[in-house]
Image (cartoon, rainbow, N blue to C red; front, side, top):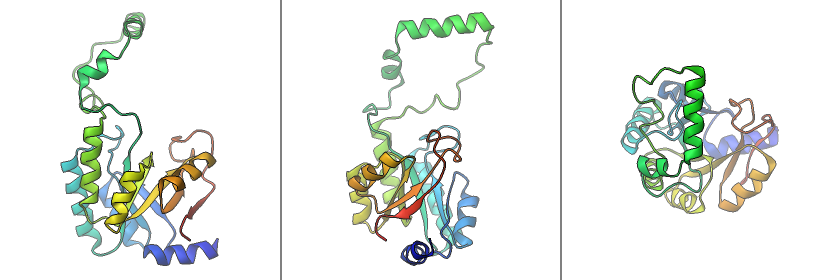
Length: 212
């Protein structure tokens, strides 16, 4: 592990081989300032992928002001197969009547009270339009690493590399490794079930770099 740690730390400009992904900017800055690699989850807490581009720019600029020239990154969720536009009506049109009736029956059976207002997950519909705006916000920022939490589109990685950013893919199982490398990711970081069960039953067992 020491043979991996030293060249990777030197390559990334950090003192400790620790990646810390967080939605809180103070936490990201603290990790970087302590010699690790802080990465801002630009997709938003408790509502994955729900950060608009303006919010992302603001947060990343604030982190840079807190860490000076020390390296930090940003993490986006870029799953394939998203609708083209941010249209709630279009998404709702795809929900079958069978499913709608099933939900109604559950509400009636368990006497669920009506919602007092829209939930935090309903104001933002994932789409290719918003995804591109998020990507552009990160690419225009001063982050050193562009990380992909779900999906690593080759074209996005190519654009990030062209701007001198190191690309990173979070992997949750062995079959993710070859896919991430084929897509062009420079660095791999393992994320197992101990990361809030995002990746199934596999624990965090490996972290390394494709270019070490």
